[in-house]
Image (cartoon, rainbow, N blue to C red):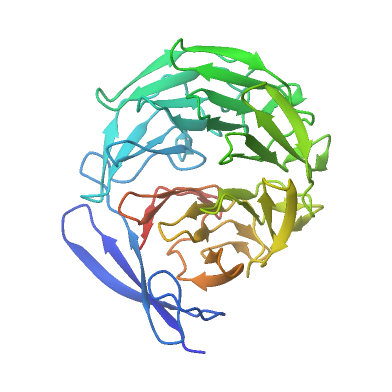
Length: 381
């Protein structure tokens, strides 16, 4: 089997760059010549992004939020860094590959959610401030670079999920508060800046996933609750505000990923459950309400990240594995149901963020590795 070659270009804080080459070996061959390895040598590039002179490295590193703004820039906010909980926020410009500081958030938080509203503003919600879960929420206005506080939730929560519904409201569900796991859900209305309670989930859960389906309903899957890893899944109907149970996954899992594919199915990948790291993946079909297994990942992992590429494939990066913190990355092809390895990241990381940019590249930011909070970022092209 021939090896696939990846190129690591390290950009300094100036506009010049230096280049070195690393080589990784694929365990599987594919016919793609852009993102995956083929039977002949191909090049897949991972680039370590630079920072501007205003900041030598990114400061929001572990469990920040990442949002793609309407202008194509990436907003990274909050999280936990080597100096503790961060109030800082930064912008990444794909056209220059540079970071700049923007307005600070008002409340320190990590493990929060961020949602890009239909009006272009970014809503960050909840999280943990080091002493308790946070009930506050803030709005970022890209036109001013400032954050303003908005309505508070009924519950402080972290490790919850949030989705923008087709009606423009934001659904927040589950998570963890000072009393334990939550089954409550709330709706944020951007037109009023207020939260209202909606129907409770049937199962308390956190570290679950939440996906908006093509029919407008919201699928919540897995997580942890009642001291158990969960294989259950539920559907939220915005027209009624009610949750109903749907088909169970074949394996309980938490800290997994969920991706809505271009065919409308939801791909759930890896995670941990029953004391094991999981390499299995499953597909949810909203037309039947059932899950079916699909190809397994090459590496069992959790606290990884998954992003949908412009070609419809899914890129999984990093996470924690049986061998420790991982640099590995894999691609899922919905047309074949198979996973193939691709170029490794330059730095092992978990609990990072990953976002597909408007230019098709994937930006990976921060995370944790071997007792270090990471202030680096990388590009997958």
